[in-house]
View 1: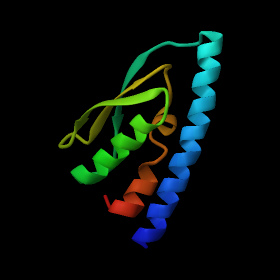
View 2: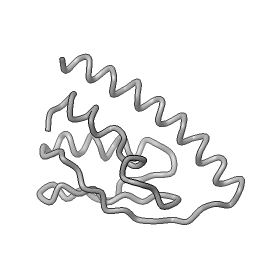
View 3: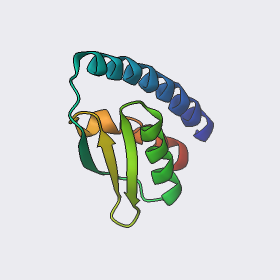
View 4: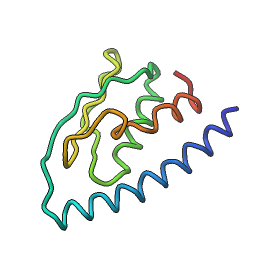
Length: 101
C-alpha cells in the first residue's frame, strides 16, 4: 500500500509543479502578484509527514514553506497570491496515505 501511495505522490507532485509553473508565469506576465502568508492547518501528526508536505509545498513555484508547528499541526506558507487551503496543500492525502498520519 505504501509503495502505491508513494508513486501516486510523485506523479501528483510533478503535475502540481507543472501547473504552478504555468500559473506563476501568467501572474508574472500580468503583474497579478499579491504576496500573502497563510497559516494552514494539517491533519498530519508525524514530523516526517509534515516535513514531506512542507517540502512538496516548497517544490512548487509560487509557494514556500516558512515554518512548521509540529505540535499545533500548522504549516506557515508564503504564496505570491492569496489561495485556498486546497490549492496550497493538495498533496496532503497522498502524504498521509504514503507515510501515515
